[in-house]
Length: 423
Ligand code: EPZ
Image (tube, rainbow, N blue to C red; front, side, top):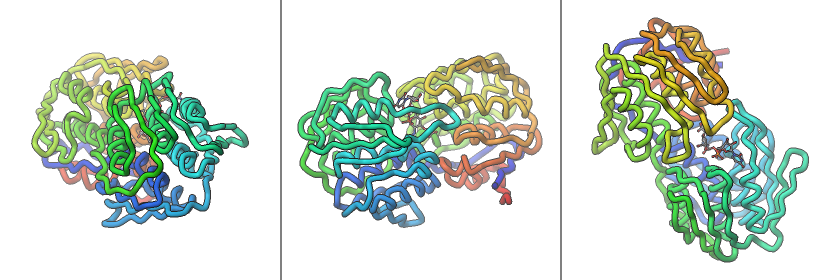
């Protein structure tokens, strides 16, 4: 397994390009199942999760071609040969469950493995199931698979989600585009990835209103056509790289992201004393190399609140803040696995249930550490940027799921970082 070696190397300067959003692309790709015509996605990120989704779609009989070094995905599902999403794919990537709604709408049945637990939590699918059953699907759990069928087709319904689940919103909205009649989804997720998916579905001929609000209304149509859609910028990658100059000091412009995608995070980052400035190309972040940031309290919330996917990265910054910070993780039940690894670098963190208390220390020391999940792995790299000496982050396959060219992007602004091929 490969590892990444990062050595504290002083302030960072320059530009970091922000790619298309992994979590938007993973919802957009299954939308190809809703039409027999081609769906072209541009600004697609080059990530292992995207390749996994391509393999899944191909296993269903769709075509998925990565053009222009993977930045353009040409998808088409003219005729499907299977409606089964196998456990061995779904367990590796939960987002595989986003083929459930489209397959039900297109073929009237689907067999999708339950993803099983992952490092950060149990991650059930009850909200997906309840919503699709409200649209008329009959869903039975058997052998670890959700066996779903809608022999008479799906019909519109009023659905109120107990929790604004991102994935459940995506599955329900995609299924409802081809249901007979009107669907009203209350307490829908409001994430920018939902907005991006709806914009693409609308370009395909879907009739949807209310994206980005808690109430989405879908008028079912007979069929959808193809489209060409540009994937929205990745707000989690943007927030992650905004933290690089905040942690190491310096002056970096993140190009291609826009501040409205990360407003709650940006406000919290500014509260630590870091300069955050929107530019016409993205977001510029500055922090004097020898200044210590101030401690702040963070609570993760659904959008537009502080994103859970930036909690680990923010903790890395707060380990060297002046004062005591508390981080409340309210979305997932086990998302502090980066804490013990940061403690190996000298951080002072106490975790009690969903709350981590971080007492800032003057500086961290490099150490060998272990990546446990996607966002935890990048938080360790961020910590290594300012640590004294060398930090070796192992199991970086987690990183490849969600961050393209991390070494290239960070060394491009002066970081001392390299990837070591493992056995
Ligand atoms: C999406 O996951 C993202 N993944 C996650 O990003 C992100 O952390 C999460 O949304 C929250 O923003 C993709 O978009 C591919 P949820 P998703 O359904 O859709 C519970 C990353 O690092 N829940 O909003 O799975 C669930 O257990 C990944 O890029 C149910 O109880 O998130 C969790 O506690 C990690 N029943 C909470 O809701 C359900 O049926 C949020 O889950 C579904 C979810």
